[in-house]
Structure formats: C-alpha cells, structure tokens
Length: 330
Ligand code: COI
Figure 1 (tube, rainbow, N blue to C red):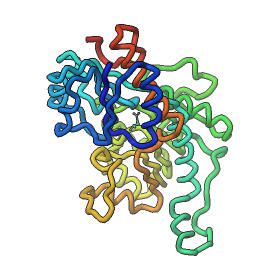
Figure 2: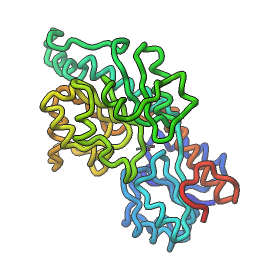
Figure 3: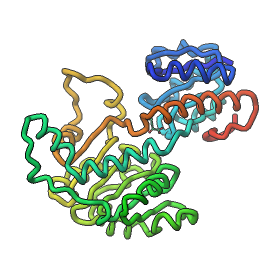
C-alpha cells in the first residue's frame, strides 16, 4: 500500500517511518502542503495523508482520483478542510485521526489561567524591565464559574481536569451527555452564557456552528466574562468579539484560533504585511492572548495523529473496519 504524506514536519518523520513500517505502508514524505501544483506526486498512491492548513478542494480531489487515490486521511480531528461529500461522490473515502484530548484540554485551561492572571501584558512589562505588578490583579478559579460549550472528548477532558481547580463547571452539549452528570452541571446554552465567568468553546466547525458566538450570544454573556477558543476560528464572529472587548463587555480572550486564521497560521510572515485587520486589532489588545492554533501540539498528540492516520487508512484499504472513517464507505 502506498501513501503520500503532505506537510510533514521534522518531528513527524521518525514517527511516520516507525508506524509506516508497522502498518505496511510504503510512504512518500513531502514537506509541502497539499496543493494543485504537487497533486501529480499523488499519482499511483492508494492514500493521501494531509493536515488542515490548505483546503482539499473538488479540483484537488479530482486530481487525486485521476491518479488512482482511494482514500484521503487527515492527521487531524476536524475535517472541515476536506470536501467530504465530493470526495465520497467520486469514490474517495475520507478518514480522520483522533488524538490525546489532554493536549487541547490542558491548553484551554492554560489559556484561562493566562488571561485571568494577565500573563501576556506582564511578560511584555517584564521584557521592558518593569518589574511592578500593579494594574494586573488576577482572579482565582475557585471563585469562578467555567462554562464548557461542547462536551465531546476535549470538552469532557477539560471538565475532568478542572475538577482540581475548585471552580464550578457548567456544560452544554447539542445532545445531552448523561455520563458527565457528576462532572459538569448540565444547563441550557443561554443559562451557561449568563452564568459563566469563562466560556470555553469545544465545538466542531460546520455550517451550524459558524459564528456560534455572535453579538447576540455575547450579549447574553456575563459582564466581564472571558472567552476561550481553542476549537475553530469560525465559531466566533471577530467583529462582535472586538466590539465586546472594546466596550469592556468581555474582559479578555484566549484565542488559539480566529476566523480567518487558516490562510495565516502555520506560515512564516516575518517582515511581511498581513492584510487581516481584525487579527491586527485583536493582536494589539493586551487582554487578548493569541497563539497559532497549536493547542494540539504535544508529543503524545502528534504521535497519535500519525499512528491513527496510518492505522485507519490501512484498515480501510484492507477492507477492515476503520474506526475513524468520516462520511461514507466507498
Ligand atoms: C484538529 O485536529 O482538528 C486540530 O485542530 C489540529 C490540527 C489543526 C493540526
């Protein structure tokens, strides 16, 4: 079985080699992202393995299909960068690769703490040799209520890991999750927004969740609340967020993602102009901590992503049950 793996970074190489051997793959590793210009290299491959920083468009899928590709697997949980319906319609199966939820969950908690304790402006102050702390009085989690929007594997892990911090944890999920009853107080979304000092998003990106946090949702939030987004940029309407931060409705935000990040993150723009005004505004705010979508980026998660992508695709191509198949079996 042959697979081409795009967007390979140094840390993944030994893992790809090791798990490639284990699951019987002959691998071609490319550092470049999957694009039309390098689609020809997928010719003769059984599977294409991608990350999420470029869109796997119908045109790209047509090129893979013409080259005999039977499966596209993404070393990510989210697959909104792949046109799954189109892939399935032309006979290409799509898979994803879940990984340790602690990676993102702990990062979300880190962002909560960093925003509550004003770490971004304090680091800047420290770098300027100003060693005073005045003006940046922090808040403590045991006095606060955290609302988790989305209680999948990551939301659930945030809830579990928050237990030791002594805060009240509210949770909302599209479909109620009885099993979490001891961990979170299940409430309606409006109640969660109204009662939470920190709202942390753990939803997938799909048409139904686009701008899930818009001006109306922010209007329902507690005055001075903090918003944490380690999930997907399009969940939050940038303009509404900026307005809320400017007028003090929200006291801060921790954003590992923002709407529009896909064309910016995972690229080096040193000394270049980035034409993204909303990003520039958010980035300039002392109470907004932004990082380049790296909550997942741990040794365990990267190994899981590599292993599960190779395992799932191998199982699929051998006609076995692929636990990580998305969409249809084709
Ligand atoms: C995912 O797996 O869905 C992620 O968010 C991480 C990915 C961008 C590498």
